[in-house]
Amino acid sequence: MSAVTPNTIELPADLLAFAEERVRTGNGASVAEVVREALEEKRLAVLGAALDEGIADIEAGRYVEGTPEELMADILAKLGLAPKP
Image 1 (cartoon, one colour):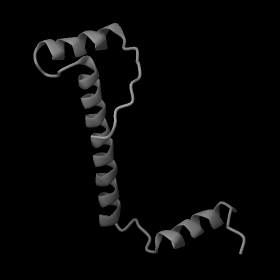
Image 2 (cartoon, one colour):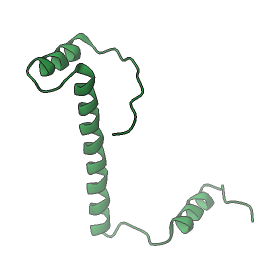
Image 3 (tube, one colour):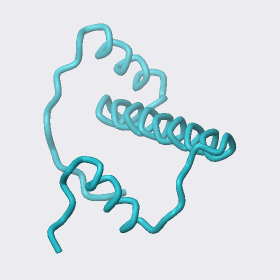
Image 4 (spheres, helix red, strand yellow):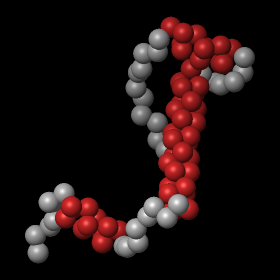
């Protein structure tokens, strides 16, 4: 795991009680760990959903081919932001 930067967050009373209960029942070493694990689970779920959507698009033929540079140039051109030669 990368370095941890200390910070403070405020949780609504119901979420704090839930996190404290998780710690009390041995499902986390601290409230901070419970929150960290919940955020990591959410992050992985969002990434998984994006991956599933991308795979579905490819399977349905909704994609374009090209290098990242070519694709970025096309996007910039469509936005009228094409780089100057």
